[in-house]
Amino acid sequence: KGYEATNKENGQAESLKVALEAAARGIKFLPVDLYHSDATVWVAKNDTEIYPPFNAIEGLGDTVAQNIVRERDNQPFISIEDVQKRGKVSQTLIEKMKEQGSYSKQLGLEDTSTFYGMHIIQKKKEEKTI
Image 1 (cartoon, rainbow, N blue to C red):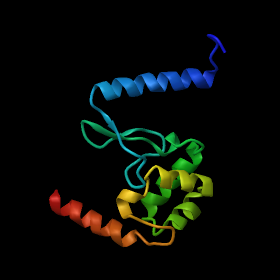
Image 2: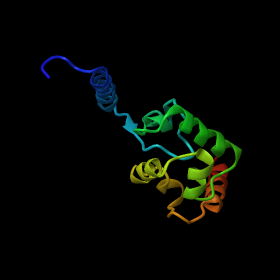
Image 3: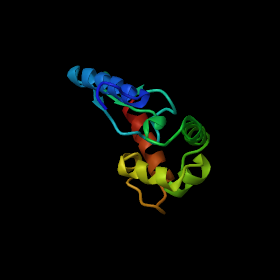
């Protein structure tokens, strides 16, 4: 292509520059997290770790990202299928989220396992440590 980059390539280059700067400053990028990520904004876990937003997942747009956050805030998800149904998330995106570990931390779940109880247990543990 020579020196002519597409808009997408220019955007990717800019993102890589920011990621390189963050890494140089010791900032760790966590996986998208079902209960901690925002729809469209990066969220700091602490001074050295950040959660990417749902829309950072390739192919997951702002509308689906907002659906996930809205439904999560309304009521905890009880399974991956529940995320898919209530969040209006395609099977392809569900698979991408699995590959990236978006569910594993919360809940160590499989397709049909429930994780509502695990979420409540985790919340109680967090409340005790505060």
